[in-house]
Length: 135
Ligand code: NI
Image (cartoon, rainbow, N blue to C red):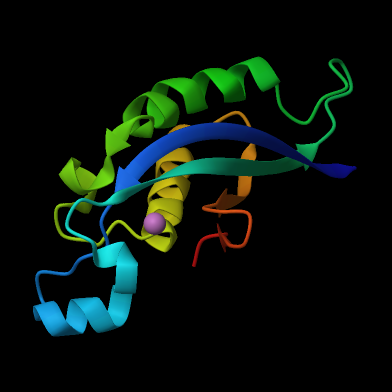
């Protein structure tokens, strides 16, 4: 009996969408106001979905305490109230929410063992969100 569990987390971070490989005009054309030199912030909502059989003993897909502890230590403490452009994860990649979403997926995929990772969904605003479920 396979079931899915989705847990929601909140964090805030700032970014500037800018590629060193593009001219200023191309950056403006590509990213618009998001290319503003001073950057801007978002209150991100992160949803992590894991799946697996419901454990007969605990009645759970995954112990939420373990998931919360991992996300707190490896993701929230890493990204909350940071300027994403300054982080090593985005030294080469533009800190779009697509790239942030895949980065968070990779952290979970590599490090979280207790349950199978299905997908990561990241809401940037009320109007847009991104999902990544691996290749
Ligand atoms: Ni933005």
